[in-house]
Image (cartoon, rainbow, N blue to C red):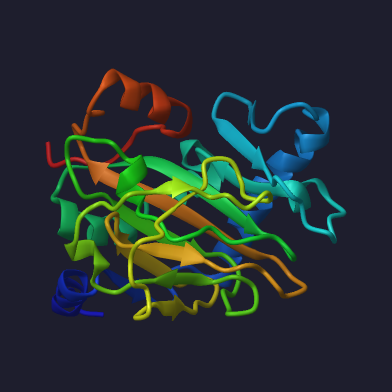
Length: 263
């Protein structure tokens, strides 16, 4: 896409996709890096914890209801936060082509403040409709989500869905996800018309850039294989939590990494 095409899509839709930004070798290596960390410190070693730190930064969220086909430690994990603090995942967060596109939106001084490696294992549930800025209680809005497909994202394996144009609205009320198998922290928007939703079908290496006000969700994985993605969140340098309560809530899942400075 050209810069003008990206600008127009961002303004009207709240997202755009850049196809093939990462190679298959790069996506496979990032996934292998995270899987290796989980196998070195698996959920089985923390049976009484709904989440746990592995090393100084990795925050691992096991599934509330693991995949029925789970065999390996990673098959029992939902998300891993803070992967961008080190290694190949950090290099991807700092990529010039990725940061260039974020800086087009947020301005020249940019930080990556959060990352999530998302495992969508066979048989697990999706995340309901939500807006990231509901969670990101910062004084500077919006933020930019950068969703890197590490494997193919299809209708069967629980791809992302978006509601085009919803970024132009406000932050809606979110209520707790009442499904018994819902993962920790899942909230949902239940009072909005989502009939104009669109699936985001992606190949490995495709990258979705999306507005933090954009309503999005994912469906259950009914396929027999995992859907993996790395999601980075970028904000303007100097962003601050709106309150001490917001700072306390955000502290475990945020690691601020400067990725672009003009001076």
